[in-house]
Length: 137
Length: 481
Image 1 (tube, each protein chain N blue to C red):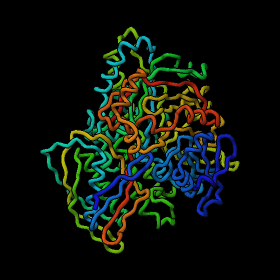
Image 2: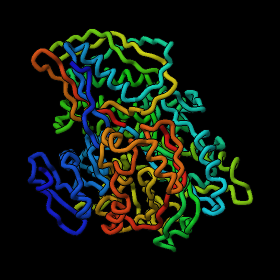
Image 3: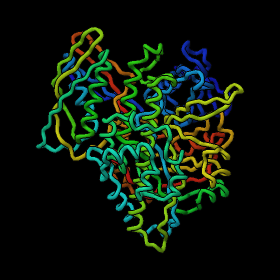
Image 4: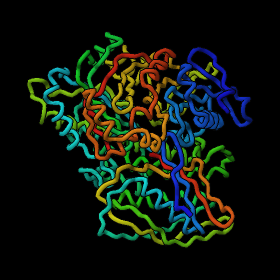
């Protein structure tokens, strides 16, 4: 199974991420988001950041998670490629807790302005999960 | 196909009636020529129709000829909501890059005198203006200075020595929105912005050295300080991470409150708040503060451009770089129009659309009272840009114009179609220098990924949205990333 793929959009960048479960799906979406940015990483600089977000549905939880990672990336000059998170998927309350791993950066080739809610989806299809998310460039 | 349901109502307007979809409150319109209409994507028209469902919308939801698909509202989208009827304000219909915009500086140097210095000037500008992407810029704001910038905008940075008094009067809204409320800008947004003042960003953001190629209206051009063969500098950037975070914060807040307000939307990105709610007022304060930050950002870059210019261009040729104008193209503004025979205060949402006030508008500085507002339209990389002037007939579109050429091709398709290094060689043959940090970034912004700006601007001119004053062509492009 692919981790993620780029989808067509005239102006911005859209990805479809895949995962065997929700934590893997979120981790692959995170990786997709930061690989799009073409980072020039500092190889020796391993970083770990904690993330703790909640929302009322899974789509919103994905936006919250990626927006949080984008915020951490912008203020710390880092990018993250892997998430180790636990996700509580109760009826009206979705919670994500855990950490993201990545590297410090020299610079980015492309900046993502924001994670949008447009054409957003998180779905279980047979025995795996898929998510579509559009980033404002 | 949604497009099939649009009817051509005159040479430059296509319209779809509100009966097309049950949730539309007004008809939707697009300004286009036959050629432009043919290439308009169905998806952008679906977004235009979604805009027509927003509570309190008046007249039409509208798209400018540079329209293409975005998120929530389409790019090139314009609509207004009635404040007295508790109309909404929608952050996603203004954009994450709040007050992304354009400014143009005029010089006293002509293209012939510039030739020997052009390469050096391009290098110097490239060295002097940081993109800030992934590493921040050179200015660090403490908490107090940040709040002053957010509250006062360009006035504050000019008072710190980063510009001259005349710069202030040639900014839209004098580079400062009064309703700005720095307390409504989250600490996270301020944290992102603390080292981003004076940085370009990436994507289609740039600084460009251009020459005035054609003058269409001599009288207005003279008032704007433009003449044939003259060198000007154009700057395109916005509110950087600070503005992006402001929009992110408030879209979240509004999305959570929608059920309570009883608002149903066809797209969550259109999340909005009725204007008389504390949340809407909070966003208005934060958005205005982010707009002030963006104007200050373009002012700081102007300072860097002026310094670089002085280091390279001999004083005998002229060191004055005068600000012709600075205009936003992602913005929400409180303006007054006659709606159904009654003067009505509305919130005009312009997302990838430029305000274009006509002569006599009280907000314009005295020297532009007779000409109308300068309307600044950048082309795609390596192609022409335009300066237009606002006209009275633009009233129907809430005095709005296009904001650029408008994309027609995805970044991925552009990279498949052209190599960045080949493109730079091709532009060099035309005498255009491109300074950039990545080939991929250049390929993504290739002219073939955009509409023909000349055609787009002709629609704006012929449809009576603004009138052409001058055409500018690039000599040196400094790309953000």
